Amino acid sequence: MKKLLVTRESAIIQPIRELIEKQKHRTLVSWAIDCAERVLRIFEERHPGDSRPREAVKAAEEWAKGEIKMPIAKKAAHAAHNAATDVADDPPACAAARAIGHVVGTVHVETHAIGVVMYGITSFVYAAHPEDADSVIGKELKWFYDRLLYWEANVDKADRKWAPFLLRDAPNKEKLLRLKKEQKLRNPNDKK
Image (cartoon, rainbow, N blue to C red; front, side, top):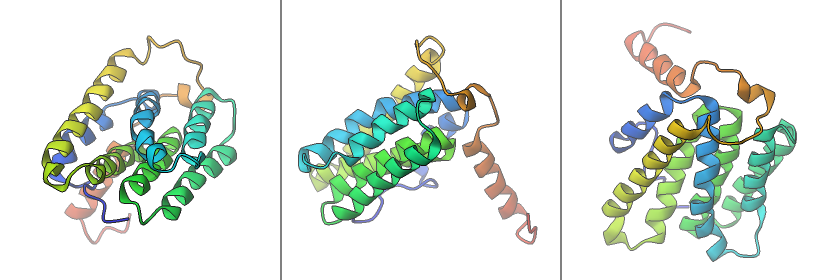
């Protein structure tokens, strides 16, 4: 795959990263699964015979409901990433499959949610004309952001079964990761 176009630290991605940091885990899971279909289309249009990314989305949904356990979901996430590796010479499809791997990862921990955005945007840009890159990034970031606002407002209204581990509210791991990095920058000699 060509390079990842946006990273966790990219200035353009900070508004959605800040919004991700404010969310409950269930909100991010609902959002990631919702976003999957849009990204998945890019992969499936280019590699219709490879069902690994679609199976990974199904595994994310089942894991979120408590219908399967982590080892099965993890295997599906790895299969999506293997699909990405297998199509490394097709950057849009490669990035799309990696985004799907992060959809599954989001069920495990919130820090994967930003991966859905980073790889999703990379996929959309590589699928577009190069001269459209800036407008595609802006459009897709807005779409991801708006979908997250939707789930922020509606996650508790959705009639959805949840795995017990997703019913426990805990500090957002994406926020904790940022705070830890900031602490390390302020105190580079601190071994924590």
